[in-house]
Image 1 (cartoon, rainbow, N blue to C red):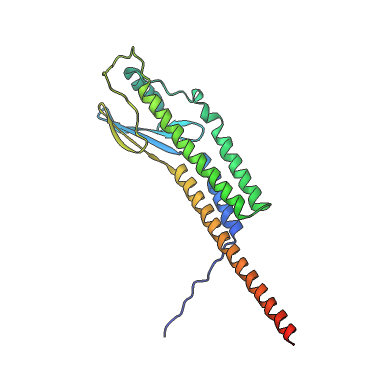
Image 2: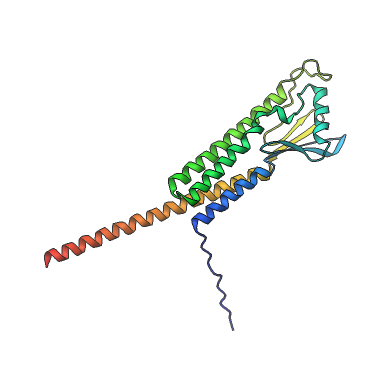
Length: 224
């Protein structure tokens, strides 16, 4: 005796599928976007910095203070959250994108608006990454000439991706959960656009078939 088990097909409406992307985008505001991890013999457990859309947090309460102490000796500027202007407005830009997405979802759901939203999200992501690179560059190259430890020609720019050795430290840098959530949101929006494009194509074909059928009917009546 064989059992024919069929898994029911779940058709999620495009509007609800798109709403899931907006929820993910809103969640990313509360998640770390980037992580920088430092390891050295004197720090066997390492030091982790998590960059959010509006702040920087350490893996432990004392992490940021320890990093600033190390930076002082090699001439790097201390990390002060209030001195980074992007933290004051980036969150609101992303919230505006979410609000615009809700407008699309509930008022004007069409392919043009979806494409425009995806372009905005992509530009926001690229400019944010460029801003992070420029911040890391300035952070690692703009050194205090009166620092205790000075090595001619040495800079301390952390990597954007991957691993880099800086003196006796090994620095790892990579995207964190917030960036992954944003990318997943963008992928869902892209899939929604593809679905809407196919639906528009089917509508066009159905309309063309209807016109041809009407022409055939008219031609038949004329012959009669």
